[in-house]
Length: 185
Image (tube, rainbow, N blue to C red):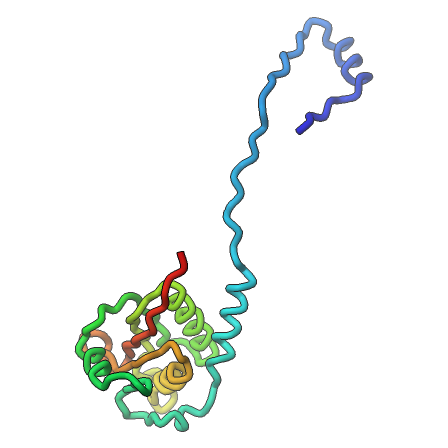
């Protein structure tokens, strides 16, 4: 890299104005560029987010077979029936959680999408989704509980989910088992 020098006329004019000043010697130093941060795959992340958002449709939760008082239970076809029993009993350690209660449906959906995206990329297997019991909703009906159940059943990566144990949130939370995703090294 070359340094820019002032024009000779300006240097001579400065020398005339300051005759007793001696310029500092120029040092021969190499300019080393700072290490650039690793590139972020922003387009891939954006694409994954769009695919997850598109995959969670807002179909009527009644079509998903959940009613207001039902306990959440879901097991993907082809899985052993004891998988759901193990999930209910806490066989898998809850590795992360998201708290959606208090959010509107419009706020909860993208938050859930982002959370699922994070969990799948991180290779997490068991997570908790806190949706609330609906005590703050109109008619005190659990809106998010049914929506979350409907959204989760649409995702192929969701193997099973059930209502959380009483000590983990009870009817206001769901414990979700995700597919094991191999991490890229």
